[in-house]
Image (cartoon, rainbow, N blue to C red):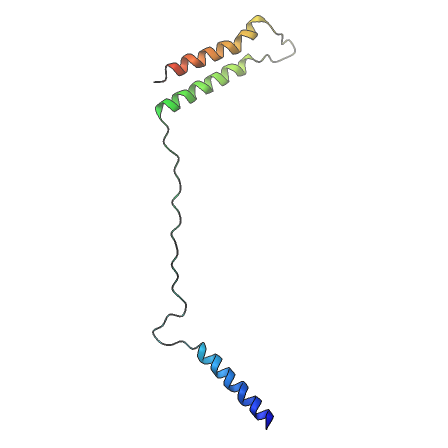
Length: 100
């Protein structure tokens, strides 16, 4: 008799769990989920003409100073090469003053 009671209990437990998972018509199978939209990409701010101009001056000065470095086996330090970085910096300042 105990075996039939256990069998009856298992059948009832199975039916209760099956009823809990039954789909009632008209109800959604899964809970409705709201998905947040992807964030918009951050665009870089537009550069001003002044910023573009000063950047151009900086690039010219960098190129100028790159030419001041003596290269090769006959590289010597002379008055001309020591004035070169100063001349580049002066050109850079004059260029930036013209950026308006």
